[in-house]
Image 1: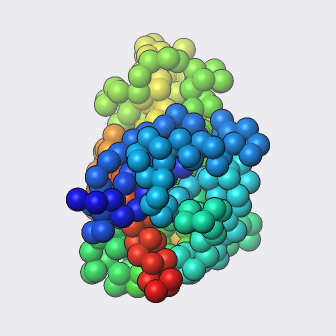
Image 2 (image 1 turned 60 degrees about the vertical axis):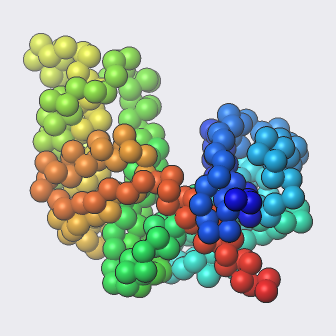
Length: 302
């Protein structure tokens, strides 16, 4: 079956690319280690040409999303303000070279009136919405775990508001550059569960974090438990505090969308807090979102 479009999620650390047929089904998939953080000024076009050549996609239209549209990437694709839907994002795509378009990110009014922003996650959310028509009706809460986790409210197919929580980045910084540093893998389920419980209502997080130190030096627990405990504590605090920032109950059901392993970690914490959830594959949603943007653009051109 012939390829119809080249779809790329070009993030900070890597680039994921797919060729899709006319129905949006993936034909090829490749990953490349040159995220936008590695690009030299003016290098994006040459790197993208390498991607096209590797997938024999030089003559295909291309849709890109993610940090490639930021001030670190190829060219800035200005943010679209919420509420926004697929059509709004599609209309705001920019063309960097003939046939190659970059999707914009989204912006909303955040905590204390400061803007909150996302790039890339919106394409997964729009893809999730495009996968089943019933998702475009009513209100849904989507939780996208990651370095900067996103809590997204969707109402009748429009992303109305969201909030970012730096859980993943905070975990990385504390694990590597604080008194809580330890190289053990965060795979101790029992320690993780204790961390989730220790998060409580999420308040006084700086004080709660020190329990990860106290339980080792004062309680005799092995230091190797610390990364798992810390992960549970941070995720637990996020689950306890983030919903209120969107006017939601802490027991509002959520749709987990993202990497399977990370979603499983969040699912365990949600289950411990008796929150109803469903899990969805982030890569499938990204592909669906990129294809939906391609169809929007194709329809506009027609």
